[in-house]
Image (cartoon, rainbow, N blue to C red; front, side, top):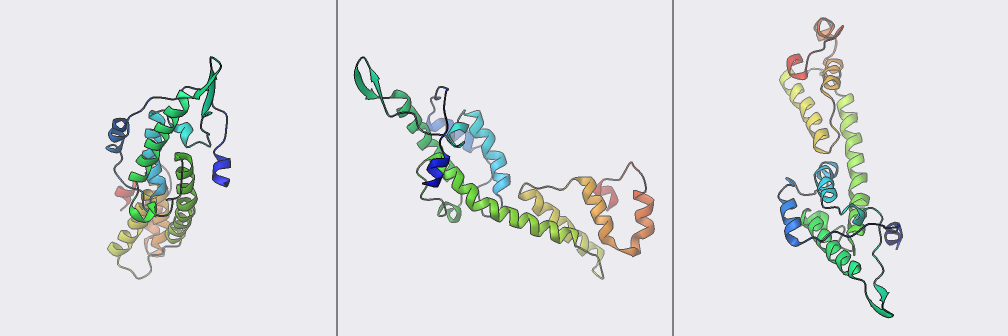
Length: 207
């Protein structure tokens, strides 16, 4: 009920006429499926396609048009309602096709594209935020210690890559300074020589 109440707002535009082919073409542009730890990256690919189809209102707290309307004194089924239901069903099916089975089982009860979209966000966003926090904590607390430099750099780059995967990349300059802080006193002179003033090296140059 709460999801359905959230999916209500005014609409004042025409419903586009879409087909299965419209969504099939878009599916070829999505390189990944939604899994438990890539929600933001998945969303960054899927949302622009939904907008390009002029279907954003189906996931943006919307509501269906009135089912019955009066025409020439007679009550008939609203043609816009029929088109809306057709589009919503296609979008809902397309969204489900962009998920792995484990994620799909979490949102199986969604009855509209809006409910499916909200359910995805409710299920995936907390896990993504938790993972982002853990990765950043791990990155910022990383210290070289007695680890071989090659192994240390591999771990550092892995944490950065995982942040990029969930849609929270670290800038190249921030990577350089964070890596410098992690290296410890052994590399103090080296850090001073490279990072005292700009222009600063790229991460590749620094490594």
